[in-house]
Length: 231
Image (cartoon, rainbow, N blue to C red; front, top):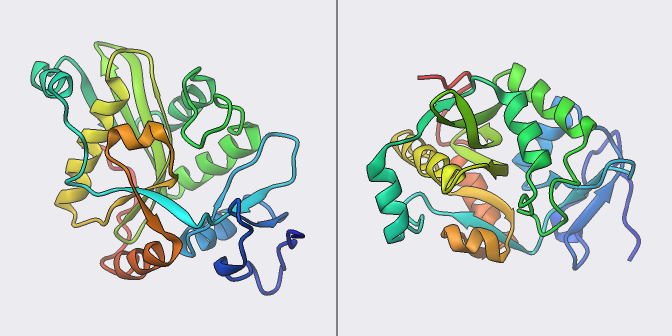
């Protein structure tokens, strides 16, 4: 099945036209306008540096319901210790670059960090500057030891990547984010591709059609809370 190029006039093809592997279209650019339009339709970019931009809408989507995070005994103990400090939107570029370098950063099932190139970093840092992309930073004293980043529209948070340099650091950041989003009446966190890593965190698979229903409900459930989310 041939993958269509993005039509500059009409935009993306219907998500139901995705290939079996989830690829919907190629081409275009990582402009803020096109990125936000993609997320609103349940589409996201994922490609290696040097390749054409590939846009995805998989048949099976991974999402984390805000009450569905798995809190194992070790995680409960970690949260009770309170040894980490969590902040928001204080060093977005550091977080995304750390995600790109994380040797375990295979959230989408690819080799660690290979898909987060300079073009991606520049694009999402641009979204951060206009208040649409957010970072969660986890600190051990003065050292950044974990975090994650994603895009927020309406009452949806689209997770992109996470990293950890200390035990459970990224998980602590995720738990803190879930609590914040819960207080704001957000829908489930979009994890994009379902895989074994996010399943250990509590992600569950839903169909593309079901994800479309989630988007329709939560994208319009409230005004977008632009950044910074710094507390």
